[in-house]
Structure formats: C-alpha cells, structure tokens
Length: 383
Image 1 (cartoon, rainbow, N blue to C red):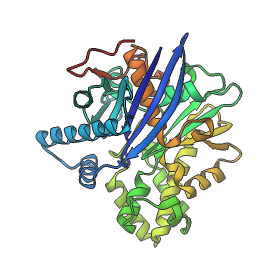
Image 2: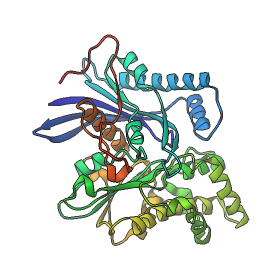
Image 3: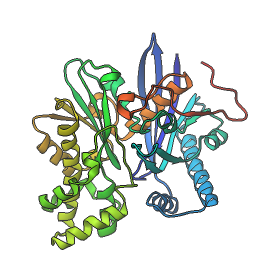
Image 4: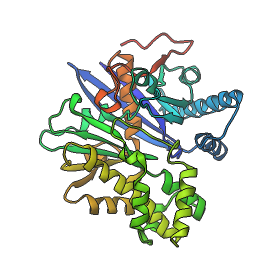
C-alpha cells in the first residue's frame, strides 16, 4: 500500500502555512514515511492580522467567521496547487487548518477547539480528497485534542536503548516522552510551556520585528530569575497532564502583564526578551522533573524554536547531561515535522486506523481522527 500525501498546518505563531509532501508506504503493518519536499507559505499581511486578532479574542460575527474560514481554506488550497509538481498525482490532503481557539478539557467542561480552513472547500478547490478537523474525535472521546504529533514521534523516533523526549517548540511547546522500546501505552505527551508565541509578540511590540532573529536581542540581555520564577508559578505549569494550551492563555494580554512587571523591575527590552526565553526553557525542563517518570537520555528538538540559537543554547546548558539533537539529525526536517505528522494522521484516517494516543490526550479510547471530504467530481480514495 502506498500513498502520496500533502500535510498542511499553520501553527499558533501564525507564521504561515507549512506544507510537506510525503510518500507513505505500508508493508505488513510496518509504515515508512519518506519526506519528499516541504515549503512554508506566508499569509498575506491582512489575513494574518485578522487571524491573530481573532485568536487573541476579538469578537466577530458569524458571517465574518464564515468568511475568514473560507479565506483560510482558499489559502490552503492555493498552497496545494503550488506544491504539486507538473503531472504529479497527490492521493490525499491532510489539513490541520488554523487554530483560532482551544479550550482544554477539565472536570467542569469538555474540551473545545476551532480550526478554520474547512476541508470541504479545500477538497472542492483542489479536486483531491481531504481529511481535516482532526481534533474533534479525540475531544468527543474525552481527550484534550492535543498534542496530535505523538503517533509520528512514537513511530519514527522510539529508540531501543535510550529514553527520548521529542520537544516541539512552536508557538506553544509540547513534549512526547518515548521510553526505550516503549509501546504506545507507555508514551507520555502534553503541552508544557509557551514556545515562540510570547517572544515573537514581544519582538513585534517592542522592536517592530516579526521575531527576535536567532535570539540575538535576548542574548544581549540579563535574565531576571525572580520575575521568571513568578511567571512559572502560574497554575498551568503545576497542572498535571494530560493538558493542552494555546493563545487563550499565552496571549497579548498575558504578555502585557509580563511587560508591566518587567518595567516595574527596571528591565531593558533585551532583559525582557531574555527572561521570556528563560520562561520557555525553564517551563520545558521543569515539566520533565514534575511529570516524566524519569529524565530522558536525549532531547530531540523540532519546530521554529530550533532557529532561536539563544534559546537552544540555554536549553542545552540547563538540560546537561541530557543530550540535545534536532529531528533533522534523524531525517525529519524540524520545520515540517508537524505537517508530516498530519499527513500520517490523514493516511491513518483514510484507512480507518486510530491516530490518537490515549495516554497523551486523555481520551477514553483510540480512534481514527479527522473528517473525510470527497470532492464533488471524484469518488473516494481507493486503495
């Protein structure tokens, strides 16, 4: 069995749409994934601004929400057409869409997650069967609907001898703990810290930059450890897994409160960026101490945060003697790992196979993830 799949996602940083074309093969239940190519496509500035405003809580009408949903789907459809090579057959699109709201499940309420960029319109525009709306089935089964990448982590990065932590640093940071020779039942995963979202917003607000390039401004600052610890006392960091978060917590309002505290403590902009970066690093490593059964021998990094050299240096310093690698070292491009993960989940869904790991999301059962949308002029994908 073989399929060529395009995986698509735009993360909480709203940097743009990550697209990965992969070849997925399965022989006697053994799945292999070959990365063929990947590219990131920036949103136009007006659409990105609107997405960020809505994700930060701007109220809009149902009609405006529907229009935004369609515009995002159209942007995703255009990406597919640009990624296709001449005369190439793409068997399946697996589109996560754009998260604009995520509420984690707790004892009082069921989880809730909204991803815009509807799969029905993507299928209609491209003529390719599309799987989307991945999080809802897990939420309906009592799970968090996040993190969603743990199946890929377990499949491709479990080691025979060494416990590993696969640490994504995107807008939000999340970890997958992979015990040596572990089964899916032994995998642990959860959102564990803000990632780039606060650092990027601070750079935009204070330096008029889209992000802090390579962490150079933070590297010129001095960490205020007292202030960092005060931020780490937030209840999210103490909450036991399974847990998830997003811009609903680590948003512009959170950042403004942190900046006010920083000014009261006479921090420079560079000091503030260094302290925000320390929050991400400490949040990640403190979660290992609190919630993992033991510290991993190796941390494997992925996501946009790997390009922040100051962040990765601080993580390497504080994580010692744990070894640090990136997924690129194992043949998985860190910039496109999440897009590859959703390509896998789409493949599993079209084959009616479970995609969630219940020890990660907290769902009561394993089940296929996503809704299938067949274009009007094509029958279902036939394998």
